[in-house]
Image 1: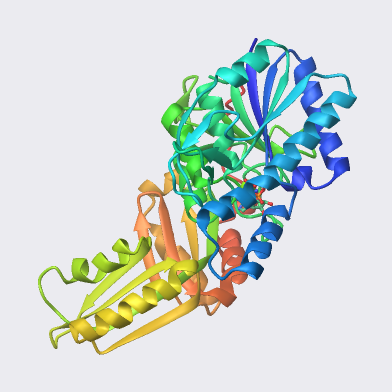
Image 2: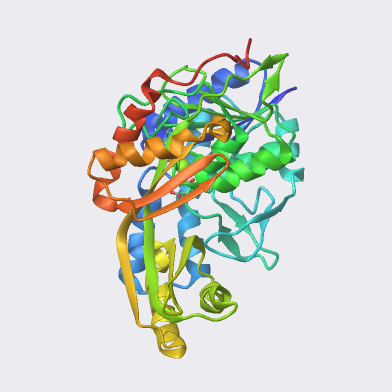
Length: 418
Ligand code: ADP
Ligand code: ASP
Ligand code: MG
């Protein structure tokens, strides 16, 4: 029997009515003749509530205990969902991450899945059960509970779909699929019927939280058929595609497919550092040793033999990075450290950008016309990102969405269903 993995996010199971609605959707799928493995998140707002509890108690809660605490959120929703399925006479069993055989490394807050031992789940499926697995959690080789990072239930679902060789992995959420921009910010945003894997990877890594980046990476590695759709409608949603050419039709790619933004960054500059060979490595060495991920980097040299070195980091790492730079400024005899943690990054993404060089110019002109100054720029083949003042995020995203006429949606030359 074909197997579907369905994941329901926090808003989809936020209260008893929603849980009953989700149960009905699962029953419909089962009645269509599929085996079903369901992954659920904690009830909406629950993970945040648990984090606040921990932080009220301790400035820096131990990651092992934090993971143990946060994993309880998903444990509640899997059990409730099974009860809702039982009410309708369906066999269903709930499993925590460790019971489901999700083995991770020991990085408690953002663990990586190393393998999935599927025996327990397979047995439960063979006995006719709907299997309901707690998302966002696993167990390390020492038996400790781990969590997969915010939004990690998406990754649980894709990992299970890969391990169980599922027909499709369906991510059900509170919007109808992947849009040209966050539909909560841009009301004209258009639903994408399909998106290439590369674009989805960029959108997810550049701030569109509709899928966790690791889920997209995992899906790509194993070429998992991945769909994002709404829990609350029957719209087919968005299909992530892996090939540009399907059934003889070449995809007519739009230049820009989507816009993402990230308000969670901070910028730091080391000013007037006496230049020497390998200086960038000397500056970034202690930053990476402290496990701080660096995003954009700019190095400028001036005529007086010094350089200015600027980079961005995740805002939660800002204080750590700032301390390191202050120390480096003394050691390297730099003039000053300047920081700004009220920045945002806006990015245009599209595989069609490869062959359209005018897009960057149009992006910069559009922002300039709105009075939005650009602080940093970075480009790759299929994306352009700019750093701006955080307060202009919505204005910038909406202006770009309009300038690239994304409300009309990309050209639909290609129908993966057709
Ligand atoms: P869930 O709890 O179901 O995992 P999330 O809140 O993690 O849901 O992700 C869904 C949200 O992602 C949407 O409510 C939407 O605000 C946001 N989002 C950001 N960018 C996009 C986009 N391009 N398309 C669709 N949703 C997006
Ligand atoms: N409950 C976790 C979170 O809020 C995981 C998830 O929802 O995917 O981040
Ligand atoms: Mg999510």
